[in-house]
Length: 136
Image (cartoon, rainbow, N blue to C red; front, top):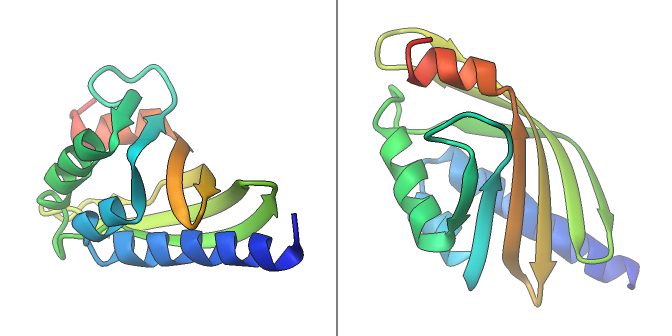
């Protein structure tokens, strides 16, 4: 795959994370193919699983109500592209409505085909997510 295609795929991922960080979940969903899936890895019941695009938008959109500014900021720390995949190490940050700080670290694996996101695999600290969102 040409270096320009790899750079274009990385640009799609950067735009996705910027859009997500603004709380624009509909904008993120618009960047995904109709049959795209967002996969949250782990064993956390109620969160881990495979979400088709519209279910992902519903899940993520519902989560934004928990944040003071209606957005979880996700800042890429490192990004590597090969083939149709872009791997991202990222740091998240949000202030919850109750004042607690949610600052997860992520590894995200995006698959990009023809400029559209066809799959995201999200790896995160499920213990932190549980303690913040489920009161554990």
